[in-house]
Length: 206
View 1 (spheres, helix red, strand yellow):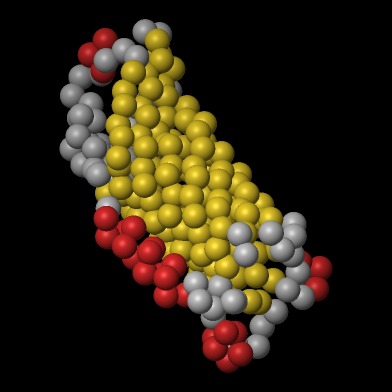
View 2 (cartoon, rainbow, N blue to C red; view 1 turned 180 degrees about the vertical axis):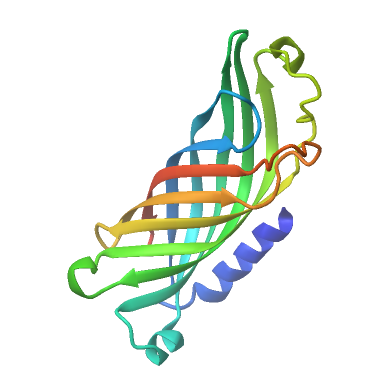
């Protein structure tokens, strides 16, 4: 996990001297779930908070004629994820918190009717820093051999967002993350992927 902070620090120090590079804070409220396990599950409603940089690709911009501006958009965040299940014996809570690093390509439309819209896509690496369970145990709920006792620390997903520029300082976005690595390695009946859908806001410091 220290490597993620180190990479982000290098990016910040390496590009902060350029006036074109922007940085700021971002936050969202999302519903997360774990696909393929825990019957009768519902999403966990929780926040994420983080920092981002917006690095323009000026050379790439000049080489391709298109009504788009291109950016590299790294984000580091603390994200509260997981899910809950609703059973006759009560509710089970699976609260999994991550520190995540996402490296987006950002494409900002700047002509025509959609000039204030943008979209982003990229890989997201999340490291589990907290796992908390509450409610009935699997045995109490009648689950035998569910094999969710061991959770992977590192999770990989594809993240995408569609956003709108309100002003030079503020943007809002809708984001979806789809996991592509299993959450519970010992459970083989189905793929256990993290999923997340959130509504967020970004604020630029410069």
